[in-house]
Image 1 (tube, one colour):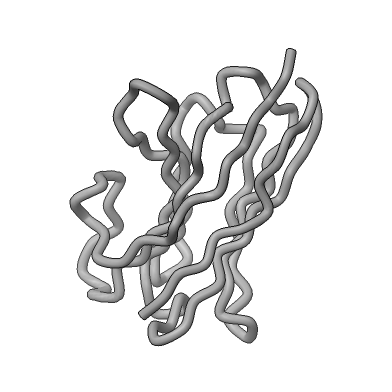
Image 2 (image 1 turned 30 degrees about the vertical axis):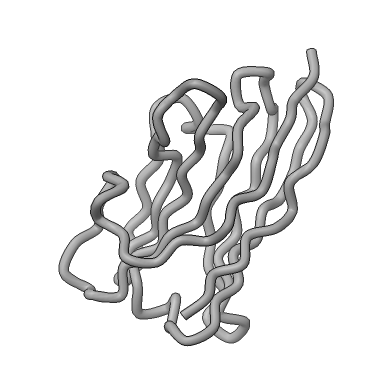
Length: 123
């Protein structure tokens, strides 16, 4: 199983980025897929998740600005980020839970992780 996260970069405050999480060896369409982020010196935190049944949940800090979506044909999950703020700067990770039992917001709820992609928002 491999998850490949990409799409990060350097953007000015107010800008947009779209992250992608492509998978091999696991069906993202039958998994709960989450996005997490980790800023320097901080713990990894929940950003958004889409459950195997399509249920979507966002962290309060990104609600209304970020959109998670899934393309089953491409076995890819996206995180569209708009109105970015300097405090969104972090390494972003995608993760998958193929068990179909939970739709967790916790790091421990996910079995497979991508390598992370850096998002830097300048003020």
